[in-house]
Amino acid sequence: MARPKIYDEQLRSRLLELTAEVIRTQGPAGLSLRQLAGSAGTSTSAVYALFGSKDELLDALTAHAFASFGAKQQEALPRGLRALGLTYRQWALEHSALYSLMFAQPLTQLSEATLQIAQDSLASLVAAVSQRRAEDPLNAAVLIWAQVHGALSLELAQAGPPETSWQQIYERLLDQIEASLPQAPQHGKDQRA
Image (cartoon, rainbow, N blue to C red):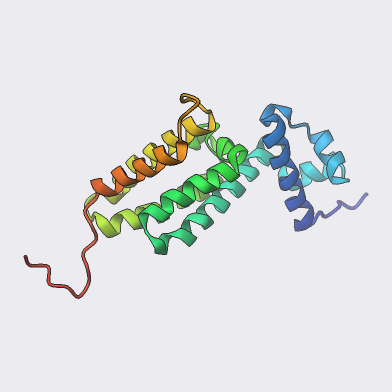
């Protein structure tokens, strides 16, 4: 009986990298596991051993994208709500194909593990909102998310007039979001006035 090959994390990472490149250049429909394996210098058996199927490979890449996005959001959290918004846009523009993949299907169709990573990526925004709004921070965070996601989706699709300054639009959107939330109380200052 032949011994099963064991594939390492380095190959797994390389396959995710190459998949991301295919998604960026050709979209999910352009992904061929045979071509992917050839580009990685391995066999399709390795792809199946590491991921199980094409759908599971795409799910793993989606998890990777949400984890990367969530890590950047976590880094921005200490700088406040506006920094989260600016980081959101920067990540989406730098990783536009992954950003599109993250929202290509309903989150409920992702694996449980990937869904959890996706939900965790919202935690920084909920934390920032809860510092400014004690009542219902989750729904307020989802409302903000819907606004920035909508603006970014329009920008990525270049769905505005040619002279649209997406940077200005986004900055004004962040101004409106910040104005809609009460300022965080200053610790150590007299709150009576």
